[in-house]
Length: 205
Image 1 (cartoon, rainbow, N blue to C red):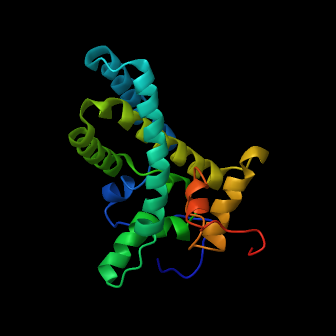
Image 2 (tube, rainbow, N blue to C red):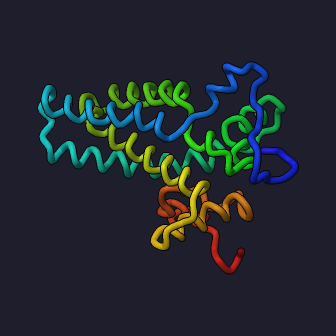
C-alpha cells in the first residue's frame, strides 16, 4: 500500500470508466437492504422447511457471528495487508484496501460494494453448504450478520464521534490507521488482537 500521505479529505479514482468507478462505491443502506432480507429468509426457511429447531438455529447463528470475528481478523491482517512485490499485485491490494488507508474518511468505500460482496457471499454459502449441509441456513445468516456489525462499526468509526462505551474500538482502529498499520486489525472486536498480541497500547502511542 504505497501512497505519499493519509488524506482526510477527498476520494481516490480507481477506474477511468465511470460505470466501473460507480460500482466501487456504496452506502450502508444499500448493503442492509440486500442482506437483512436474506438473513430473515434463510432463518425462516431453515425452521419452516428444513426442520431446524430454534435452539439449534440460535446456536448456529451465534457460531456464525463468532466465526466472522476471526475471519475479519485474518482477512484484514493477512490479505488486506499482504506484502507483495509485483506492480500489478500492489495495484490490486491498493484497490482492495490501500485506498481506504489513503482516504480513510471516504464514506462511500467503507462497505464492500454490492457486486463483489454478493459474489463472495455466494461462494462462502456454497462452500459451507457442501461442508455442513442445510445447517448453513442458520450459520450463514450469523456470519453475514457479523459482517454487517463489522461494516456498521467501520462506517461509524470513520464517520462519527465515538460513544464512551465504544471508545476503545475507535482508538484501536484509529491507531491502526494513523500510527501502527501492523497492529489493531480487529474492527468489530479486539478479541483476536488480544489473542494474537497485535493490540496497540496507549503507552506506544
